[in-house]
Image (cartoon, rainbow, N blue to C red):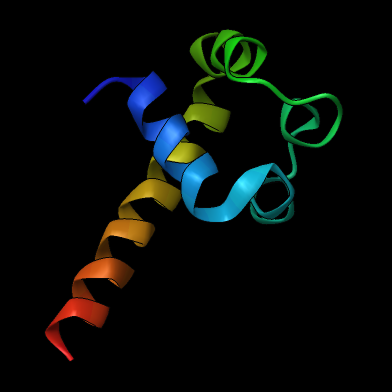
Length: 68
């Protein structure tokens, strides 16, 4: 799975505002777009790790809601 696919899935689920609330990054709160966010995430390992962790959390939550 690509970083772009992960970011797109998170934006579809939470929106930019929700993503900015969950992960405090300027690229999510001030004029957000996929291209600028990808640029930052590719250069910043700790930010990328937070995005990947949120994605895994989202998948776990979806799996739990389906099993109920």
